[in-house]
Length: 333
Ligand code: NDP
Image 1 (cartoon, rainbow, N blue to C red):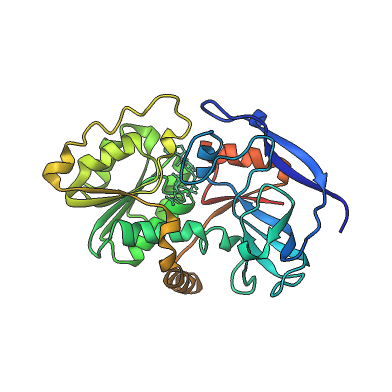
Image 2 (image 1 turned 45 degrees about the vertical axis):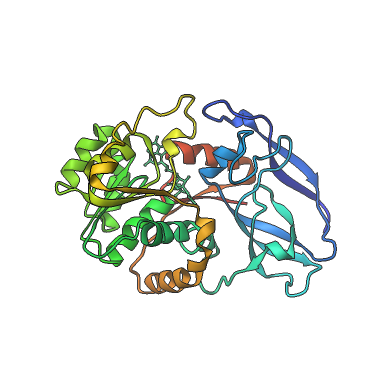
C-alpha cells in the first residue's frame, strides 16, 4: 500500500494545562510490514487521562512520550496487510499504537477482537481496559460487599459510570456519584445512581453528607483533592478507598491542599489502596463474561463521546481533561 500516513507528535512538554501547541500533525510515508508485522488502518483511538502524565519527562509506571515522535495508546483498527501467521486482511485488532491513521504493529502486541460480538468501540470502553478498571477497582481493590454504600467521583466518565452500575448490580445498598455539570448529574440518575451531585455547586463534603447521610463504606477515587478529603470524612469504620486516579492534580502546578484529614484513617481503621489495571489481568476472563452478560440483558449502559479526525485528536484529549466527555472519549480516524 502506498500513500501518506498522518500522525500526531508531541511537539513540546506542557507546564500545567496542555494546549494545542504541544501537539503537531505530521505526514509520513505509508509504512510496509516486515516479517511478523501487520499494517493496520486505525479506526477508533482512545484518549485517556494517564496520557497527561506521559507528557511530562518524569519517571513513572509508563515511560514518558518522546518529543517529536508519535504519541501512542489504545486503538482498534482493521488489518490491511499481514506478514504474520494468524492474522489476515480484514481482521479487526486491538493494539497500542494509536494517534496515527495507519500503524505498523508487531503481531505479538495485537489481539484480534470480534466485531460481531460487540461494536468495535466497546473494546476500548465497556469491554476493554476502562471496564476492567471499574470492575477490578471496585470488587478486588476496594472489596465492595452487598449492602454497602459506594461513592464514586468523575462518575459520568468512562470508568466512573461503570463503577456505579457494577456496584448496583453487585448489591450495593446505595450508590452516589459526583460529576461536573447538571446534565451529567441527570445522566447518572438515568443510569440508576441513587444520588448524584455537581461538585461545582458547593463543598463536596456538604453534598456528600446530603447524598449519604449515614456515611459511605467504599470510595472509588478518580479525582483526589477535596473529593478524597470529603470521602475520608464520610467513610464509616473499616471503610476502603480504591485510588484509581487523581485527575484534579494532573495539571496542577502546586501539590494539592487536600486531603487534610488523614489522621481519621487511624480511628476509623480505613484502607486507602492505589492500583493499576495492568496488575488485574487475572480478572479479565471473568470480567468479560460477566460484563457481556449484563450488556446482553440490557443491565449496563455505556456512553461514548466521539470526535472525528486525527487532526482533532489533541482537541479531544484536551476536552477530556476539561470534562467535555460523557462516558468514554474516543476519536474516529
Ligand atoms: P473520564 O472519562 O472519567 O474523563 C475524565 C473526567 O474527569 C472528565 O470527564 C471530568 O468530568 C473529570 N474531571 C476533570 N477534572 C476534574 C476535576 N478537577 N475535578 C473533578 N473531576 C474532574 O476518564 P477515565 O474514565 O478514562 O478515567 C477516570 C480516572 O481513572 C482518571 O483519574 C484516570 O487517570 C484513572 N484511570 C486509572 C487507571 C488505573 O489503572 N489506575 C486506568 C484507567 C483510568 P467532570 O465533568 O465530571 O468534571
